[in-house]
Length: 134
Image (cartoon, rainbow, N blue to C red; front, top):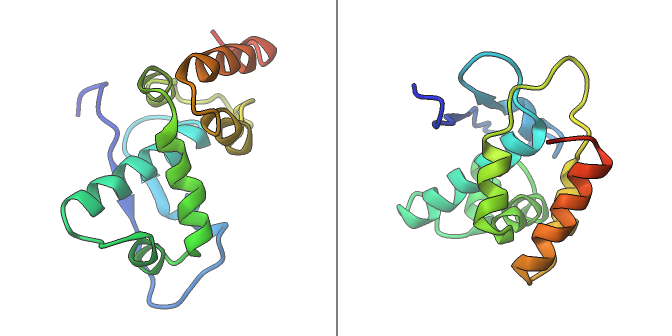
């Protein structure tokens, strides 16, 4: 695997686990633990690919496959509204040191809610500055 590749593997369940189970079932190949926002964005990209390939017809199918609610799928997929440059930065974040990465998914979804990519880049820059991320 090259350093430009993020592999996402899903463990599918016959029963419906809680929404919090999705990140635990999303595993990233490679050393260290990637930040959660990296894993969730990679999941959104994988889900988008599954829909494009016909493996899932819509969000309800993804929710059933992943064992989460449709609302959770919508939250995950909202990250696809991020400007491509921001997505690239997030996917290239280095593995996190022990502890939590300072920027969470909720803050990232707020950035994605801005439809203007220039505003997104400004908001993303502020988040990184506040959290001392280069």
